[in-house]
Image 1 (tube, one colour):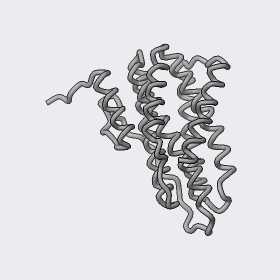
Image 2: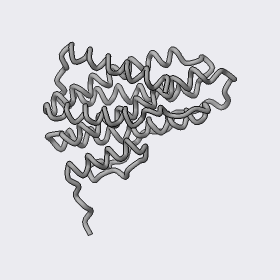
Image 3: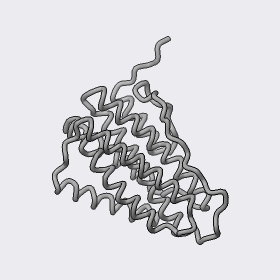
Image 4: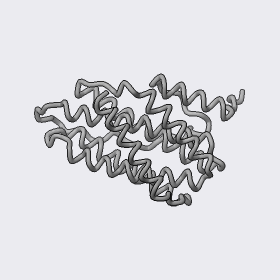
Length: 216
């Protein structure tokens, strides 16, 4: 029997439930391509350090991956072409892998994800859907700029991590490599550069999210 074909409304509700509950949904037919991403190497042993700052930073990164999934899911729901939708859903699968890495590292550090997780996901899903309605080239431009800013943010966190926390650093370095690739792929698909005011607004919204996730 052929699998059920989900409408855009079905997919929207599935993604919203996924983000609000924090549970993984099986990928839809459009996103069945598997990700080839591998777990970053872990050091054989870690030097003792105060885990508080590392945990706070990893909680922010975990929230960022929740937001990234929301953005990609929202953009995929309103994408015009199958090529763009497939790219966005594949990127969302890879962001889920990043999410898993961050969640595992938070557990190792004795901490927990942001309690504001449903807010990060729902807000980003709405923003992504709105970006997709502008057209695929603008939506891809949103991806390229988002990944550029995320890479800068990861650079900052890599510098702020305790020098002894090699495990967290390896996770963030691998994430940065993947985020840069996502941005490059969006540009290759024809992304339209975003105007400076939009880029500035994105930075302001990211600061609000980072501040909230760091504390809660």
